[in-house]
Image 1 (spheres, helix red, strand yellow):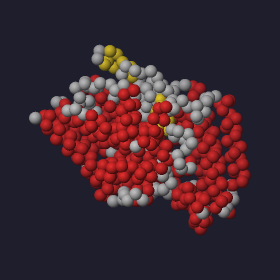
Image 2 (cartoon, rainbow, N blue to C red; image 1 turned 180 degrees about the horizontal axis):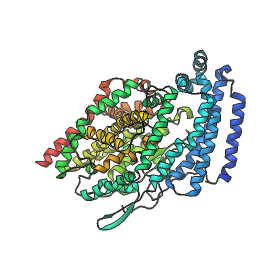
Image 3 (cartoon, helix red, strand yellow; image 1 turned 90 degrees about the horizontal axis):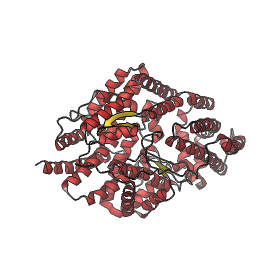
Image 4 (cartoon, helix red, strand yellow; image 1 turned 90 degrees about the vertical axis):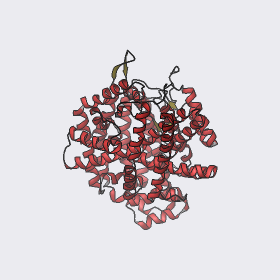
Length: 595
């Protein structure tokens, strides 16, 4: 790219300073609200009528809103400047403060959950509490997994200097990695995001050297990685068992309000379709004329030239795609640009990847990118803006329902990606151009479904192994390589350094079993997108109702309300079939070009 003028977000809607001294009055005001709330509410909930519990819920939300807002400010500053000591101090202080306030508020849902079913029913029957019915009922259902207030408080306190500290150590440690290699004859020093971006380089030698450099850094820190994964996963397993979860993944299934059988079905259907992945990469190797294809080559560009997409062009491309779909989608995305809510380009002190962050319904979200001008970066922009659009729609909900349940979180984001891809397909001029676009689409789909499914399968094996004994780095690598072979078959070679890829996946430490939600969301959207293609504009109100619901209803019921049965294997197989139809189209173009 020729234009990389820094584009930083404006966080003034959240807070204005990383000074603890200047933030102290706000923290004091929150503490005073907590004092009053505890005095008027603690130990008295089961005697509350519907109106009183409604008032308590709203007061609780108000306190949490203030706390979440200042916490979001701290962590967004941390995300773009992970080596700033003032920011690190501010985040640490805010984390301590948040933990203390959360501990003091723990009683609230513990008391709600332990209330007699008749009391819960009476509260829910009153229309005043209609926005809170799902939360109240879920609190009652999840109560069996909760510990005593003192135990919950102790876990929160110990986690700050225990498992959460280890997670933060991982992020801070790996964010300091730098990678130096010659590119086109020039010695180049990169951060992790920039190094991984070389997977898209035209030169196989550069791709393979870059990925060897990247993963061998994690291997060099094997003693750290193996210790972190063993310790964090052992902690997760111990707590899950103490709470009474059937398996470690059951804890995520309960949070997601998904039946274990449905999640197992998702894993099985995806694994059964791994042959699609192998078919694609065999075709790609032939098209590229590679004598061998390794995992470092799977994202290699198929076009003769890979011109960078300027930021301004990416912005226009995404907004035009949204405008062609729906006025609200366009207006919400445009507002994100107009109000400076994006932080766009990479830096040596910024965390890798991309995310959308939202805190409370009355404050618009923020998006962080590491934009490098690749086609996938445009898709990432559409994806993260999709999350933001979702937040705009769900802002009609109270805080308790504002953030969608994880499996539904990817609905707007993946849908928006597909809108951009479809718009791009219409602009392709030649079979080759269309084939390149389909290749990128398939690779993104495989990365979001089959790759995440592979991660999740690996997690299940790793958690099971660590529950029995400490697992060595060699054993972890063996398990991971097994899952790679299951996904790719014999279509690609697996270089030795890729056995350490597991160590570079932060989700496995931060939120165990989070990754299956990506697969769930991707396949869910493929199903929804087929409905859109068949129903046209008539489908859009259905999608908006889904997005507006936030977490006010469970995923199974939410989709059933729109006539969609996600407990049926047929639904998921139809999504796989849609993916295969794109593969068929790609293979046909490939044969045409190879002749």
